[in-house]
Image (cartoon, rainbow, N blue to C red):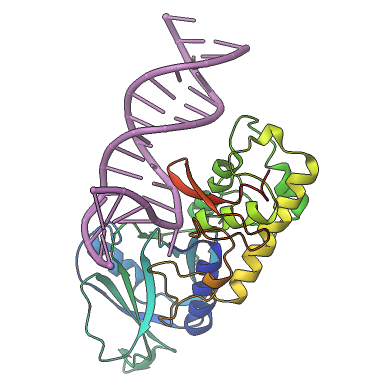
Length: 284
DNA sequence: AGAACGTCTCGGCCGC
DNA sequence: TGCGGCCGAGACGTTC
């Protein structure tokens, strides 16, 4: 599923196409967790004008001009994809949004002239959308997350990797309250770059190692964003295109293949029920 | 059959 | 004995 670089890619596409537009229709194809209390969800959104689309951790945030917002989490297989006017809903689609540039008024009637269609689909239905009525409530949701790795200084990120001393570093990286937005792929990739084994306990890391890891987290995320993220299985961006970072992965999904640095076979273990990949020679 | 890019909840264990 | 912290297991649909 999308991690920070993939969500960031989608965020940029949504922001560039939806900023300033108004939602004119929301169609639900099935009930589900992604659209709690369907009618109210639709009623809350229709007529809202988007001031910007932002990202926090792996959440997408549509900010509306009236201070309310819509948050969306793609989890493993959620997707926002722009579609054409004659698009036929597919099996796992659940919501279709229609937008107009500016709602034209004539004799007190809103003239519907849709210019954009966006579909939300989710094969596994883990993802969700939630309408947030005011900025205070939104702030509450955001407060659950640790610092944004591309906004915080590396030193600040490194400091968050000190405790609890007995926690495995991989487990800490996956915890969104520690650092926001890092998921399974980029945790493994950053640890390889920093030459640190995923099973190391935080208490065993030197200050130098923590700082190196923090900087490698920032680097790998930036590099992936440049290439539109990583598509392992399902991920596509809002244009329906795959990310191109897959070929640059050094360990994730490369069990048995040679380490690009030393030629040793990449190992796969399980930590915190997540598959974890590392080079037994390069990572101490 | 087993695993999949995320996260939540629950139960058990450890240590103060 | 009580409680917080932490960890692992299981759950959430579906696909390949």
